[in-house]
Image (cartoon, rainbow, N blue to C red):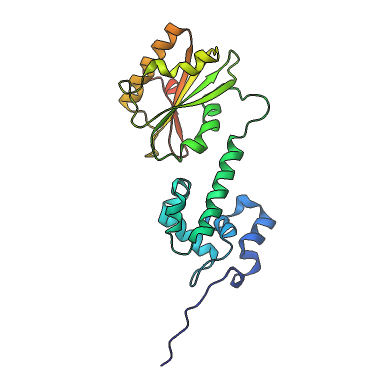
Length: 234
């Protein structure tokens, strides 16, 4: 009895109208699934899987797009069927997406509502595996002068030196700041410590004549504005 040769599945085995590149050309990138978009980057699959199937399995193993965003190069290399070259291609594509998202026009972006803040930081912050606190420094027209990455690790009013948060604003003679921090769990619900820190910074800002406009908590794909929700602070 002869041993059967394992079947290799290729993108070219699919009907032309089902191939990711052809679908992208005719329908636009937005019409493709995440696995199909990954297949275009991966180009080829492996024995037993075409590139679309490999892309689908990759998403399952790393925890979807959020997990893919967070995964390190070494972690991607461990996924069967990827290897160093394909993993590097994926990380390069993710980094390009981040740079496109954060590229600012010549005029400084203006902050008028929580969505304006989220659009500047959410792409990068939602992928962080450790809690971080950033401070956006604004001028009198609510234009962003600078974004300072201040703290890493567990954040509360006892570990964060409130005065330090105002140093970037004082150095630039700024009118106001916005605090932003992430929850690596993906759930942006503010903790009691988040609310206590917000109260402390709001009071300190009044003394320094630098307004705390808001404090946003970033999760995966969503955020909470503490000022918008109020929580009895503002």
